[in-house]
Length: 247
Image (cartoon, rainbow, N blue to C red):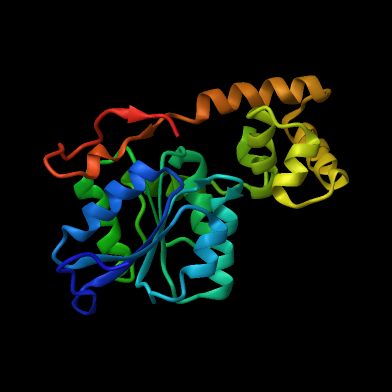
C-alpha cells in the first residue's frame, strides 16, 4: 500500500500484521507520519501475512502475537525459516514477562507492549531497524537474572515450563475450546491435542481434565489484558496509551 505523498524509496518500509482493525489502522497512520518510516503493506491474519509479505519487500515486520485462528509465535518461526534476513518486532498486549523471551527464541528481534508510549514504540522500531535487539529494561534484567541463576533442572515454574505449542493449547483450553476445536484450529489430530493436554497436566501437577480447564481458564483471565485502542497512534492523541478496547 502507498498513501498520498508517501515516497517509499526514501523511507524504511514497515509491514504490519494485526487482526484488530482499528488498532492496525491507527498504527499504519502513526508509521506514515514519521519522516523516516512508511507502511508498505498490512495483513489481518497469519495466512494473509505469509502470502503477501514478500511482495512489498519490507525492511521490518511489526506483528501482534494474538491473531485470530493462528499463533504469532508460529508466524515468527515461519518468517524466520522463509525470510531469515527480515527482522520482526512484536507489538502485543500479551504479557512480556511470559512471551518476550519466547518471541526472541522464535526469531523476533524485539518485543514491545502495546501499553507503552508511542515514543517507546518508535525507539523499538528504530532499534530493530538498526540491527539491534530491543526489549524493555525490565525484560533485559529478567533475562540476565535467568542466565546468572541458570539451573538446568527445576528452573522453570508454572506455565514457563510449557513449550510454545503446549502454551498455545493451554491458552485455547482456557478460552473455552474443547479438544476437537483446538485440533481444528491448529490443523492437528485430536490424539495429538490429547497428548499435549496430558503433558500440560503432568508439568503443572494437575490431576484431571477439570483441573486443567479450571487452571487454564483462571490463567487466561489473569494473563490477557484488554488491548489498547488505536487512539494512541492517531493524531492529537497523548504519547501514552489511552482508552482500552477489547480485542
